Amino acid sequence: MPKDVLYLKIANSVTEQIKSETLQFGDKLPSLRSAQKLYNVSLNTIKQAYTELESRSLVESRPKYGYYVSQTSQRKLALPSVAKMKISEGNNSPEDLIDKVFGTISGTDVTQFALGIPGKSLLPVAKMKKCMINVMKKKHDSGTNYEPVQGSEHLRREIAKWAMVMEGKITEDDLVITSGAMNGVYNCLMAVTKPGDSVAVESPVYFGILQAIQLLGLKAVEIPTHPISGVDLDALKKVLPKLSACCFVVNYNNPLGFQMPDENKKELVRLITEYNVPLIEDDVYGNIYFGAGRPKPCKYYDEAGIVMWIGSVSKTLAPGYRIGWVAPGKFKEKIIRQKLVQTVSGPSLFSDVIADFLEHGGYDHHLRMFRKKLYANYLQIQKSVNHYFPDTTKISEPRGGFMLWLELDKKICTEDLYDEAFSQKINFAPGRMFSQYNQYQNCMRLNYALEWTDRVESDLEKLGKMIKNRM
Image (cartoon, one colour):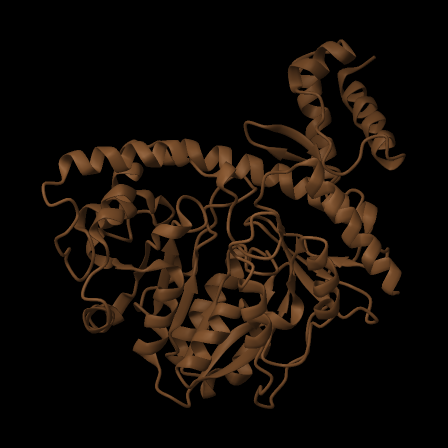
């Protein structure tokens, strides 16, 4: 049989297996070598067959991991809806609900789908301990001295080295160390706004950003946001003249999980530069990608110093260390002055431990393993939701990070569901937390950065049954 026909025959065979659900979303295809032996053909023929399947959007390649049946091949549930623009001021603060959910942070016997914190089993705890010991041996002051207000020079240098996605556009002098990413967001808002000003955010929006805006006496303007492409730039353009800042998470947004396309990022930067409206870019999930490489942040396209780029190790290494950073562009001196007044400096011991890990601890290796586990968890949770939840469920399609956004039937109030679920030691984040308006009451956010066990699977099944019983 001619080779050009043979690869199509193999591709068609796999296609039929996918259509009949013999191969399902998330299943791994045989490796190239295994498939070569299975079909008794050349390696090149198998490569052609798999490339053909990719072109049909039936499988996706995960560099170094292999080929998997793609989510688009058998997607049964629709994407979440895009909220309409609201122009009235928000007056329904979700703080009561936020306090309720955060009150469970220390619960040890709860399946923790609620909070955006990676499970301990996914973190390099042993290596971090070694770095702590190394640092303590080297430090004659045991970490008791102040570090520079701008932050540890060693840490800033290591962060700049790891910011390879910026292709040399960020140096250690461009960075200011903060107490986690949210402290960076808060400081950036403080630097570019005054009470009464308006700040654009995504909708749904991470509730911590809403709280920071409220605490500073600002007004949040929720912009309609698509679960695949992100902020509606046309809607944003209409309100830009009235804004003092934008605050967006464009790479693996929390809670929708989207990755804004590069052309949209370029257009966003062009628009804010034209209107002279600073962008506070929370890029805390940027290194947790499922594709072939790390996506560019908006900061990469910034020529005017108007994008304030924020990152941290809270989602990948050490949530409790509270080590973050910001590249504030032309607002750097203001950020440093604010930090001097607020905290004088950060805890030098934790800065040195993170710097040591970045320099000697195999951060790149850890991230590869971390992303692999998270992607496996993502495939598991997608499959579980498809299997156990009602057919009317709408589900996001994250390209990275570890958040899944679900939109349930209108009959379901996830705030009421939360109480029932928590009584069975199951936790999640109800949708009302992610808006200043009374909306998303039928939505929820699930964190899948946890050790995947039979109990996790069982609790998702229980959650699905609770929802079905309420319909």
